[in-house]
Image 1 (cartoon, helix red, strand yellow):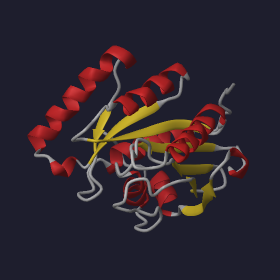
Image 2 (cartoon, one colour; image 1 turned 120 degrees about the horizontal axis):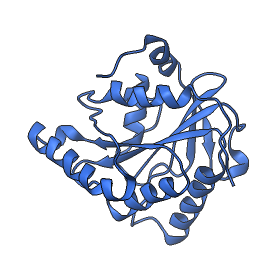
Image 3 (cartoon, helix red, strand yellow; image 1 turned 135 degrees about the horizontal axis):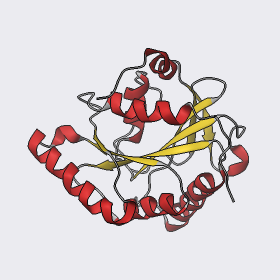
Length: 212
């Protein structure tokens, strides 16, 4: 059972948008601790950030896939940040743009020393796509901590959502040795405390991460 920590939850409520970056040179200073939100286009990353912080319009949301084309940074305090990565897998984006997004995100994940973990969001109706699994495998190979969050769980009945969670967990066991999976709904505000608990653990770790 997760316990609420009012101290850290107040931290999220003071989040502010720092700016967007299209290349490494535009990233904020690499210090403290960051947690990145990753997932396919239109999976609900921005909505998740908004409901977790309790700030409705903090991260821009759109029903149009591929809207987030930069890495967006949100300051919690002097040492801690949340990061909204561009969504992957948007087929209608030009090939050159998709390639540039991929290079930018990989550059961030590989070299960002303040990165403590990745919240990997997947649509509960289409979990663990090939691109999702590629990111899971990449995190495992890089020894980068991650947690999986199944978004839009309100789109399924409780029984079907639990079944989808179990099936996703079973598919992951072979490659990752097992991981926890959170059922999440920004609309119903489900799973917020569980995700905050993961964030708390990562953001409290201010040690420098070893990178290539």
